[in-house]
Length: 160
Image 1 (cartoon, helix red, strand yellow):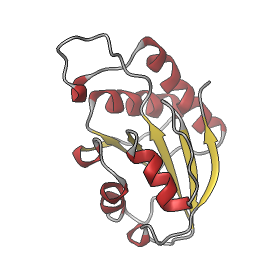
Image 2 (cartoon, one colour):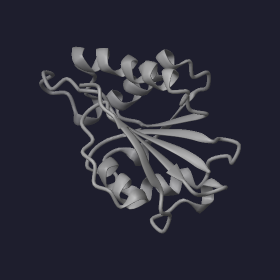
Image 3 (spheres, one colour):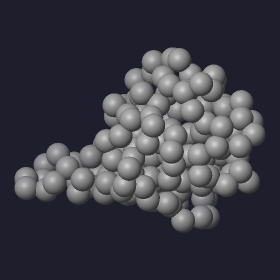
Image 4 (tube, helix red, strand yellow):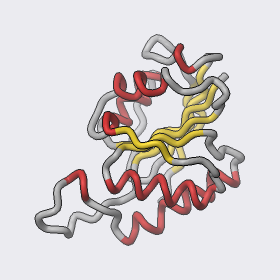
């Protein structure tokens, strides 16, 4: 059994004229919410063994703040293919994760994350900014992950 945590990046700052979408940073609310996610992970004993984030600035910053607040001790892996991608991009990356990792968190963007939740559980769940979906996967090895897996949506935590 593996656990996948799916985290949508925290609220981004839209008040940055001329800044490319990939380079937008977090809003003040995003900077408050991300550490709350990390604290929730710590409280629920869900500190990941591995965090993989989209390379977009707002996702990277979210991942860093969550990691720091949760007590995560590893490096945050960056994945450019998570930027505005669907479930297949996540599956391809997750299939390469070491099997010693039992809890893995991915940090990315909608609509891809909502599509990932549906692909793994069959359940449609809104994923507002800084929401975390906890999915139990009936797999022993990460290379088994894919749409044919019937995971269980255990919980969705939202900061509001």
